[in-house]
Image (tube, rainbow, N blue to C red; front, side):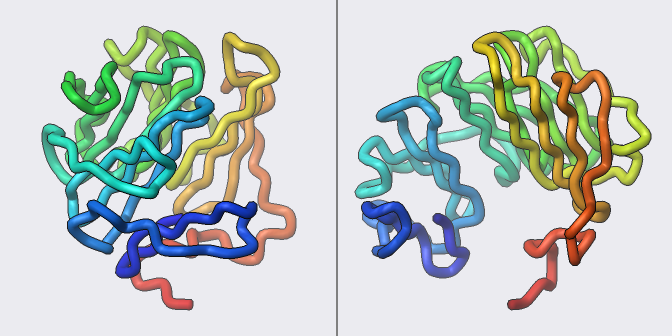
Length: 212
């Protein structure tokens, strides 16, 4: 887990105990952390706008060069284990097919940050933005279009998560909205339903100015 100001913590017993895992990190201001869903895959962290990779489950870290503005999201997929997708504060998506050694850049949105990025299939990627809602690419990042749905009209997307019942596409998609709770699609994004029952707070706990 990531802790802004305290770096990365690692557990070897399913979360019962935790220890710091900051060897190689130049800063403990860790704002993003993502582990590959592929078995034995790398972990990526962002600390003070620098991208780091760990190939030993967080025991040690190595910094990576990356293009562009401050990183606001990281996307990893078990179907493309060598691919790393990062979103930045200027609305761009950067793609690496060699675990962060080299990068190519595309512009996903004309304004605002890319706050979430998730690969759905070999051709489809969902991008959550803070200014243009949820965007979808169905041509492997060559172009993007806004997902039009009443449940998504509140705008800023904080996170996107998927669960797949097939190897080709994610059927269940969850979207966390920055100001309006959660939205779910059970058909790969064809339709969307607002899911707020039981939520005691519509906005995100990690929003600016939030204190425990």
